Length: 103
Image 1 (tube, one colour):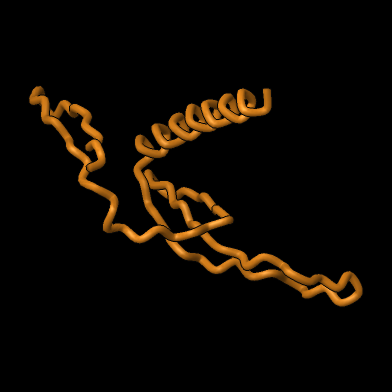
Image 2 (tube, helix red, strand yellow):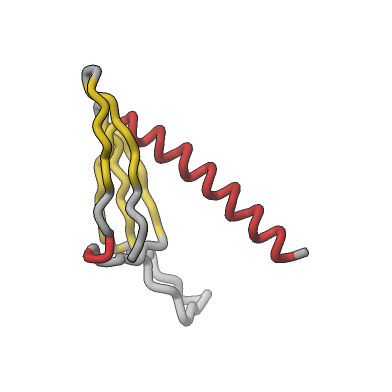
């Protein structure tokens, strides 16, 4: 059984414990492209998939390659800033692990 992610949130002087449920029932969607935009106080993350190019004839190139959007997520500016910090921290940890494996 997976451990639940728990954090505390203060709301108007009251501290509430927020408990994440299990993500086991959420389908995993593969995305190899990401487009980020913002409007007002929200950020929009649009994840997409582009099929790998198996054969490419340099003499007969297509005029474009299509990316199929697979998910669109809207987040508040506050959560986007937390997301950006979390991505930076996790990426640094990932790079550190990779470097240790190379040694």
